[in-house]
Picture 1 (tube, protein in one colour):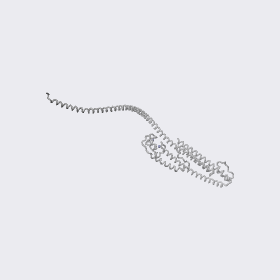
Picture 2: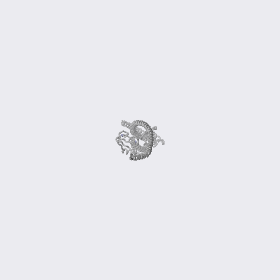
Picture 3: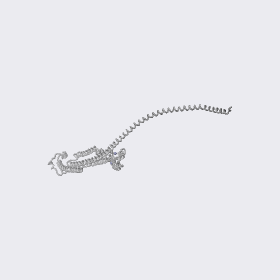
Picture 4: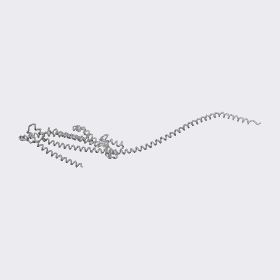
Length: 408
Ligand SMILES: [Zn+2]
Ligand SMILES: [Zn+2]
């Protein structure tokens, strides 16, 4: 569908250009014939009025050649015309050489700019879908995930897998079985960065000449596109003003007009081509931007999904934690009351212990008194026992004496 439309547009454009060329050729032919007539007339007119008549030949009123012109010899007329034509062709050729040089310089600037923007867009397409940083080592080395094959920068994947403890691809949610540095991509990015830096130092001078400074930063936003458009218009305006500056002063007559019109047509066609190329470039850039933004959207949607799941888990854990806290609080209250009871019991026991200790001391004292009393009694008993033993011995001896005396 788009291809057909583009083809049709190209056909219409080609037809229009062909028609304009034919029309211009016809017009130019008429103007040349007219200017030749005018020149033939002016060669006969007094000096000072000739140049004015020539410059206004295309727009001024047409004078029929007077009868005096026919008085000149035909050789003189031809010589005069030949000289003028040679002068014009010389001036025209000089002008063309100048134009070609300008075109070549413009082309070089344009090519450098295109290469520059191509490199910028290539590098931009290798940015991490999570942090948008260029995947260049050491911190943002490209890491390839297996088996899905998506690449992210080392820093983001470390945060994703280690800090956030995730085990799936941030883009496609495929389980990450292993990961490794994407060496080929890393080399490619490094080469691009090196080339871009080299180009940046080489091309800065030519960019300054071309007045397109600040072009590199403009690839991301519409601002850069506006600037490119302004640039293009300014360049085209510059070419037009150079025609108007050189046209009337250095080139005279209809032949110059003919060539100028051709150049204008060529430059217009060139301008259209440039504009088409610019628009195609913009389309490519927008497509790349769209892809990047879509990737980022998917990554963020996955992140949102995970975060919502994390929130649900956190809410559940919080609920459980609240239940446990309530249980622990009730146990704390219970334990406190137990401690209170035990303290009271301990107080009672301590009182009993005190009482018992007093009783014990009293009984010890009583025992000591009894021991003293026993000692005293024993000491009192000892002499009495001795006395008794002595008296028993005396009694026994008396009884023995009594039994041995006769009864008469
Ligand atoms: Zn990243
Ligand atoms: Zn993936």
